[in-house]
Length: 230
Picture 1 (cartoon, rainbow, N blue to C red):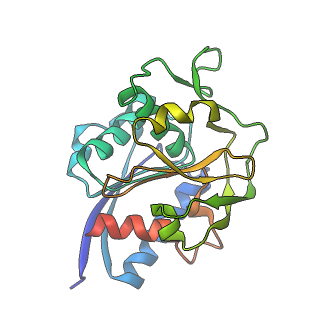
Picture 2 (cartoon, rainbow, N blue to C red):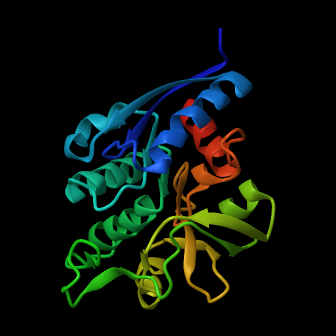
Picture 3 (cartoon, helix red, strand yellow):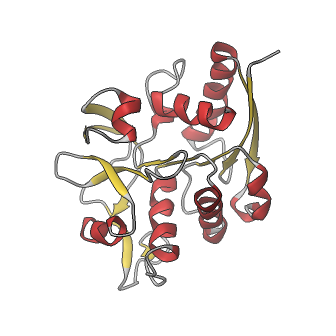
């Protein structure tokens, strides 16, 4: 009998054309076999993301934007954040985690995602100065943060597949309400965010699921799975 068990919701509009979606099930299988994590994994389309997510032990908002239902993606983040459910958001998951926090916690109800509303004059998520599609780039990890504890380094190189990120000029708005940015690129733009008072809440603009050849789960994925299992 396995030592731990947990139900994980993979929130995304599943597609064989999204590399993340094809990688993640195999990575979780490896954790199940290697670490005896009895993980029950369910795919939840953004259009079906609702209050039923409260029954899960972990919520991972995967890449794949623009989502078919932006409100559903934001609902998934909110439920995890408000109910202390371990949460991991990668790439678009990072972007929508910042959007949910700004709207719901910071009171900036009108902020928008540039991919969905490019003509808005109140963009929180904006096009990156240089696209990071299929790029690797270094990240400076802030000592004393959860990210630093899990990664065990102060500098790491991670793989991306994105063209949008948080407007760095809006970081203080989120910081003032408790968001901690624990990883930055060399230009000082945020790449990892966390909520220290939450049992497990991490969002990364990079995609840890794309690290390596897919046979060894990234440290952040291991930590998320353990948090969901326990």
